[in-house]
Length: 95
Figure (cartoon, helix red, strand yellow):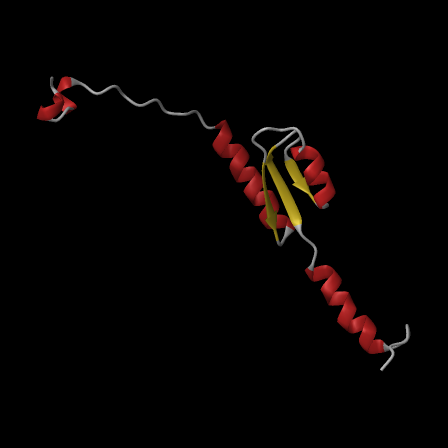
C-alpha cells in the first residue's frame, strides 16, 4: 500500500522514531569539553586532540550529570601516597 502524506498512520509511526533517535554526546576531553547534540560537533572537538574522550547518552539530563560528575572529579585534589616506612614492609623486603 502506498502511503500518502495525509495518511494518519504515517505521522504516528514516524514521529516517535524521530524523537527516540535523539542522542546527546559528552566530550569529556577534547578541544572544548561539553554536551553536544550533533555527532559532527563531537568529531570537530576530538579532531587533533591526542587523548579525546567522549560518550553517548539517551537523555540530556544523563549527559549533563555525567559531564558535571567528571568535571567535579577532575577538580578534586589528588592524594599522594605515603612513602612506606621500614615497619610497613614485609620481612622479605628489608634487604
